[in-house]
Length: 194
Image (cartoon, rainbow, N blue to C red; front, side, top):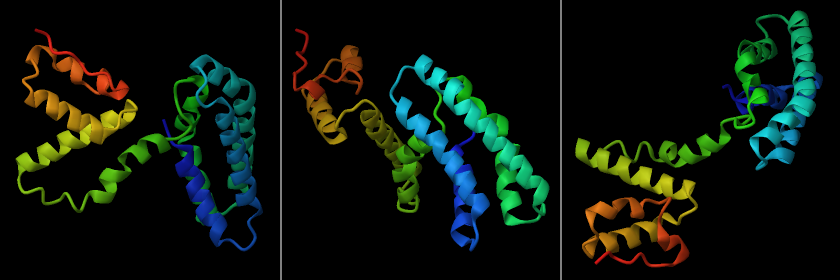
């Protein structure tokens, strides 16, 4: 898979610097039309997303490719715009992969947002104190992201699980404390087995 947002960013950066941006405007509007279809089908079952992409998005993508190919024939290969277009056309099969699978996203923005906290704090975590400290930090970041992915408040989850473990929670029932099974999300206490 390739990310339409990354391709769009390359064109957008040129659009911002250009004094006469008809080509960049056209490409950005065409990519915007792809995202408009995605906005309509977001959250729908994969088969419905696939159908919308086949019926609505595929023709838009094909027309965009024609515009890009025509522009590449006119532009100097060394121009910034030709390089931006080549970035996309070299990745075209990967950019189009989402069209054939309703489970896939048009871009990787969701994943990048999930990792933003790690990327922003990377310098802060450079000196975790030791290898063991780094491993502990990685474990707690994993727990936090897993909570977020399962719609669980990480702070409430960690506080509740620590309290339950401190009360001699049986090791045979640790699976019940995983974020995707956590009953604390519904404010229902999990009863200890006698």
